[in-house]
Image 1 (cartoon, rainbow, N blue to C red):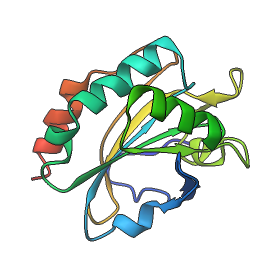
Image 2: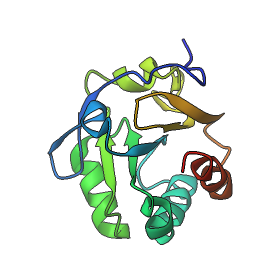
Image 3: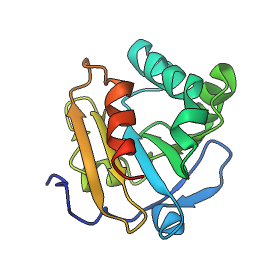
Length: 153
């Protein structure tokens, strides 16, 4: 299963790095979402991508956008990862049932037991307006997110 542009984004509730539950539907009518799946906390490409998000967070969130990053790591691992690198946006744990949300978005990699690099921009109505789906070794381009977000405002 894969998520297509124009389709309603599957709702979910996951724990963030602080153990707090975050539901996609809680942002409906309020904020657009950059939902990014990443394979592994503490890995090189993932660290680079999330640091780039961290360093550009004020620009990304200026127009009422929320960034949600999702991995299949346990929320304790995500907490250590966020604390080490200063991530203030939500790092969500898709740990158990393992990869359930990643599977709902069609980005779970069975061989790796982790998510591929999928990013979905979801509007305030809960509709997917843009996506990019890369394999584990292929980094994403933040400038592409910024262009896609500009079309929502």
